[in-house]
Figure 1 (cartoon, rainbow, N blue to C red):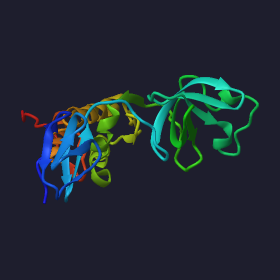
Figure 2 (cartoon, rainbow, N blue to C red):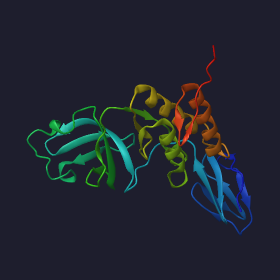
Figure 3 (cartoon, rainbow, N blue to C red):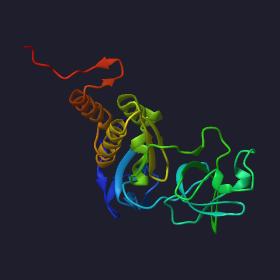
Length: 240
C-alpha cells in the first residue's frame, strides 16, 4: 500500500499506532511516530521515515562523491567534497601508474575528481579512485544541488537520471555530496541537462515527479527540436 508523500516538520505527529515502525528521521513517543527533521514523509509497508529536504552532506563509506582539489601534498591531494570534514585522496588510493615525482601532473588545484569515500574517521575522510570509472572529470560543467535531494535526482534504480541523460544526450555523474558533473556535445546540451536537474531538485517533494519531468522534457524538446528516446519532436514550419 502506498501513501501520498507530504511535507512534515520536526515535532509533528506523522503516524499513530503501535503497528508502525519509526525509521530514519523519526522517533516514537508513546503510540505516536514523530518527525525529528524537516522533510518528506515516506511510508513503506509498516516503516515510516522522513526523507530530508535540507541539511549538510554527511559522508558514508562507499559513497560516490565529486570533489575539487584544493591543495597538493607530497603523498596526495586535499579535497573539498562539500562536507563538514576535511577530505584527502592519498596517492596509495590511485592507480599504480601514478608516480610521486609531480602529483600536479595528474590532478591540479581546481580539478574536479569523481571519488568514492574509502573511510570516515574522526579527523576526516579518506577517498579512493581505485574502482573503475573514477578519476578526473574532463571538460563539461559541475553544478551543486542539495545533497538530500540526490535520491530524487537519481530516481528508483536510476530511472530519473537515465531519463534526463537520454533526453539531453549528456553524460551525467551525480555525487552523493550534491555535486553533479554534466558533459554534452555542446554547451546548449549541458545547459539543458542542468535545467532538467534543477527542475527535479526544485520539485523533489511533488508526487508523480517522473511523469511531470518527462512531460517537461518533451515540452522543452519541442522548443529545441531535439530527440527524446525514439521519438522525434520537430517544431512546426510554415509552408510557403
